[in-house]
Figure 1 (spheres, rainbow, N blue to C red):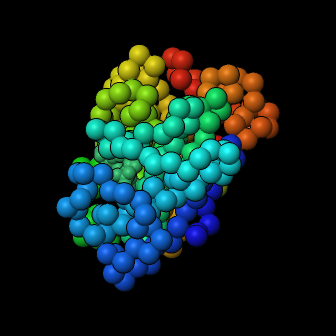
Figure 2 (spheres, rainbow, N blue to C red):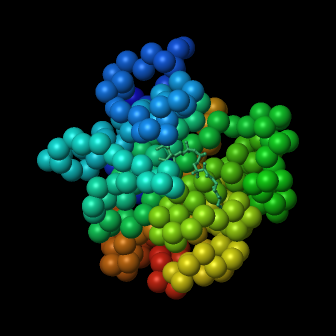
Amino acid sequence: MAANPAVVPGAVRQVSLRLEVADPSQDGDLGGIALPAELQRAVPVRQLHFRAGRYCALRALQLLDPERPVGTLARSPSGAPLWPAGVSGSITHTDGFVSAAVAHTTTIRSVGIDSECIMSPEQARSVATVVSWPSELAYARDAGLDRFQALTLVFSAKEAIFKCLHPLVGRTFDYHDVRIVGVDAGTGTFRARVVQTLSREVPADSIVGGRFEVGERWIHTGVFVPAARAALTEAPDGSSGAARYPSVAVAAGLAFGKVP
Ligand SMILES: CC(C)(COP(=O)(O)OP(=O)(O)OC[C@H]1O[C@@H](n2cnc3c(N)ncnc32)[C@H](O)[C@@H]1OP(=O)(O)O)[C@@H](O)C(=O)NCCC(=O)NCCS
């Protein structure tokens, strides 16, 4: 097991694993988790990541609801995990690290987590213009991140936003449909603006807040949408909403949680 990055509120149950496997076809205890048909021919490392993600997710579901029988977690045609009724969640895997986060939808309507290895110069060269605008990198650089950390943060934040919002808006959207407009290293938070309307609930100019953690090897990000009532009355970790989440931005019905 690995320590959970501090990117989601306390109401979210998260389980993380360090994955240091010399031979990805030897996946030990994870082997009991069945692969979906579309991954039967995938490379061993992809199969290992899928199984490890499901393993973390099933452990996190047990933490959330200890009485729940251990089941399986199907995959939607879009690739999103099909969580049990009343549960929101998210899975991420990257080289050496896997994590899953789950919550009750009565508290957290949707959650997205992402972990990425800090990019190499070659990776950065090939993805920079695809995933970012110069202004986004400037916010991250101004917060003290080096240029590889900055690009990795922008990329990871957008992946977390996508995983959180895709199940709610029901459509795909692009890296340039969301723009990072603030990074605060002191509080480990970022802000992003939705550039074009994604749904009635998420119109253009909605502000999404999220949290990040920079480690030596990985950058972790987390975004969540609190259930509307929880946002108005109490924060997802049970403390006073107003005190703990002073900057929750309410956008046409959706309240995005910004962890201070
Ligand atoms: C789906 C996507 C976000 C996954 O992110 P990633 O960094 O490549 O990979 P991660 O390992 O962190 O996450 C993979 C997990 O995300 C989850 N996932 C996949 N599609 C998803 C979706 N539509 N909604 C929510 N979660 C999804 C799955 O659990 C998947 O793991 P699994 O297949 O083993 O179950 C990414 O591949 C993608 O398609 N991005 C393009 C769209 C995008 O990000 N736009 C940016 C908008 S600002």
